Length: 252
Length: 232
Image (cartoon, rainbow over the protein chains, first blue to last red):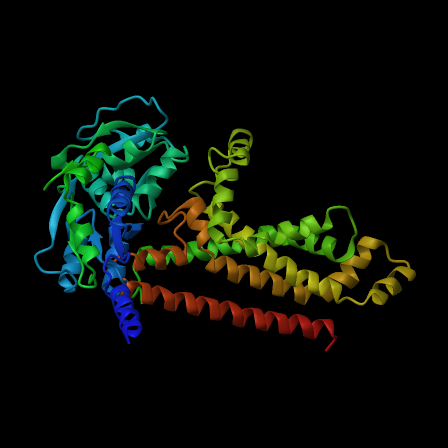
């Protein structure tokens, strides 16, 4: 009898033991890759929970979430795609907050490219020659949408439109410039920091495009304690340092 | 009817047809040569050639696209030669999309043609040469008509594959409306946007109609050719 009791309580103890590793699934805008990978590594080391991050254009991620993808946390590079997910009723009430900001820059291939002064009517088409301007998709991906808005504010969008090569997320657009296939590209300031083979040659004025805001939220599919823990960690000081290092502006 | 699809959509359809047509046409002679070599000749490196021809069939299309970018992009080995010596630029142009489509469709074309060549009865060719016909004449008047259905089948397979080519195209020449946004790329772009399903569905209908039209045409041509060969 005493042995059976000992065995039963030992079994009960193992089943009741907390701290089994949970998995947090994050859908994040592609521009967050370098910084967010570091934040996730910190979190995994500190808590033992795993973090799986899927990076893509915020439009594609929003669509996947609306169609039922099993994500726990969503960080978008623009307010409009977070609004779409909110409209679909998939955000946990009260968790949506603006996490980060960014700058929009014109980059050129090479480590020491010549800076360029941009202003209204600036001849970007002439600068490109027969090369392409690498951007993210201008109708859907935030970086492309901000870029098009800036070029429209400068009055040069119609002249430039035939020379634009669109990629499905801003990191793919960055790669085209890094490889030298496109001489210039429009990406975030943080993307330029992450890659040595491109140089920032101009920064678009903040008032020429909608404010670049990265909202983050917990999704209704998130049920583990680890999910909320990771979401809170995104606003912690250690994470702020990781983001700032990569050129993001801390908003919270 | 023109309101059903936007001008951009029609542009994607027209571009797809143009890219696939040229991809198939230009790769036909090379495809026939390679199929003939693999079917009839024995040479050192035959298995290597066979492997290379089939590589686009087994590699992930994005990998093939990346290899094309590395070789034929503006900074690529072959791309720089083409640009400096001939002034030909493939990156971000419809010609690059045609190259990507041709490379992906090549193995299907070669396989179909090779099967047809291997099925030719040698004795017919021998009979022709014993009657005094030279090798090229035998090929032109005996072999070629016999393998013509196979050539047509190979061309149609290649055309259909080229129409549906996506992964290598978007990796090599990206997605530029009017230049490289083929029908599959346009459908993919429409699907990237929440609420774009309607446009994607319309484009899918067009893709189905074009594919069925091409198939029907090919069946009709193949039947005519087969009838002529058997002398009916």
